[in-house]
Image (tube, rainbow, N blue to C red; front, side, top):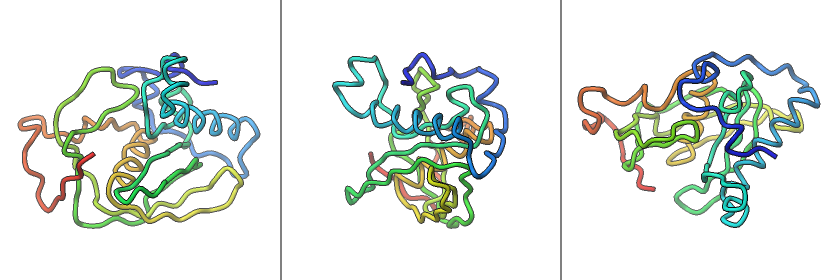
Length: 184
């Protein structure tokens, strides 16, 4: 079982490395890791388990955050209608995106970043992602709102990009052109 001890912190070199593609069909070892990542995200959202194991609640996790430089993400989040968006994917890619932007009005956080970093993080408002699920099937997912932001955050991890890299350094709360605020 993964715990917070497995999460590497800001400054760790694996967070800045571009992760390698996972060979498909995925090895049993890669499937095990992806399942453990997904289990971590689920456990972190369960108050009893999170308290017992000292987990910070998370809605997404990327393999570089557990010091594995491979293109794997696990996401478990509800959209604005309460619909569950729950995926564990190998080699996720954004294949299309909107011109319109969005951002979380409360800013973004990260399991690998212990302190709050204030500021708006511009993201695409709508994206389409392709990836391979744990069963080896290709999936294509259209996302908007919070789930779109979460997928972009996790895919950034696979490319060595941290959320705060997107924040305007001179004016962290500057209005983002052509963007809609997402309240969470």
